[in-house]
Image 1 (tube, rainbow, N blue to C red):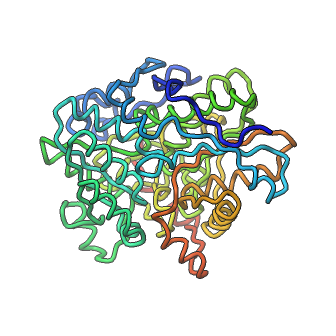
Image 2 (image 1 turned 30 degrees about the horizontal axis):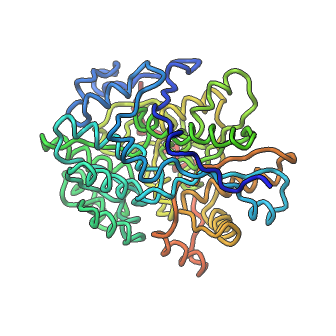
Length: 447
């Protein structure tokens, strides 16, 4: 019988990240200066990002070496296993093969440390003392807190308030790593105070939390900003996962027919699929499926346009699928998917027709999570459960022998309050109307 868990030897771990930019059939639209509407001068964003990461953001090198200090930390949890979900296959009656790439084995319990340790390292070598960041469900904040501790740096996390309240154990873990965490909107920043004045009970959004973290970094010379998704350099660091998948499938003689990942900002999905883009462009039939919540349907209902990455309009303009930088999604439990925009790389691939997208309501997603738990034995994060739902639906329609791979982006052991609400029948399926989305999109800048 073909092995169920496929594990690479530590010596086989990729030693380079893959940069897709040189291989794109059409170049990515450049980030723009919001004042001049012209491509932004890299020096203008050096106040919040170190130059080494700005260089990676715009690099034309196909392969970028992973520094040895990062390799040493990666080996705490990498290579991560690729697992055949045989019991899930049997439960749904499919003759397709379902694999999942298990990124939940990291110290933070998700794929996020792949870029967190890289960003902490590059900031550290440029003399940065503290990193400020946002977090939705808390996985990114946990990962950066871990990474900063590995390199002896301070860390401040602005956590979207509805998730801060829903997921208190994330905050505990962040503080246990030695970082500080504040619910966003907070009274620590100008933008946070403005929102609280308008709505003292605001549940916040990722766009708002980003604004607070960027404001914090810009106001303190020893501090830089770190982002857990969306940007090119973040996605670059995540490609270590997709490269491992290629090696692991080769070990058992399989090739993927479908690759699936949940998308908020797009980093775990992109990390899985980008190493396969050259094959896709050469004509290989691989479906690349991005899965999002109906409450924040960025690709499925958003607009491909230039927009700000944050609510307070402090970031450069980036071309992406967006719901409008002022969009406040409903407080669904998949907090990591409540972002108004999508990674420019993922957006670009979707616009070119290389990536397909689908959206689900949260109750059907939790149904899929429960089935996965009761068959495979592990509790997925609500975000991850979106990919599981799509994998189940795809497998039911698949031809015998087809290979479906999804990225198991994180565990749900700190999301038990979400499951409690689900089991009590208290989850609401929420979606904004087309009119509300159009109203939000009207705020996008005219470029």
